[in-house]
Image (cartoon, rainbow, N blue to C red; front, side, top):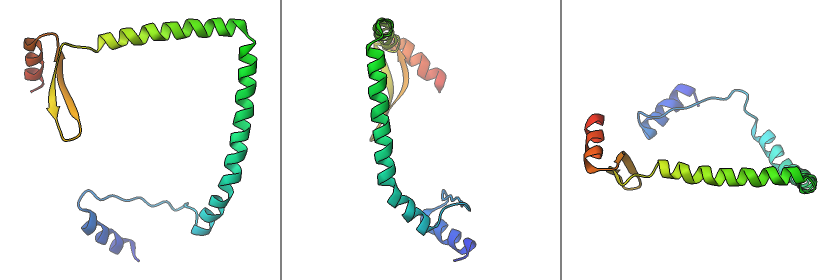
Length: 123
């Protein structure tokens, strides 16, 4: 089928927002089938190599007391930071628009007056 005919037919089916792309270097159906057949063996080899790598990393790091100390300090700092970050994004009043699936926040504040002013500014 000619490109122009296909595009016209698809535009009629999909509407004005229809778009398309062409990949001149895409593999043939046979090349894709061959690659698909090779995937289980390749995935198994990858998983085996990853397992060996993770086991070696864990053994090395478990034997390093400095690493263990640094990890504990990092975890504590991350927890404190996450707690404070949460507090900075928590407001007494939140208003927005509700669709069938999402609630879109338009304004947040500590008083109704503050929220109304923010909504008024956003127009």
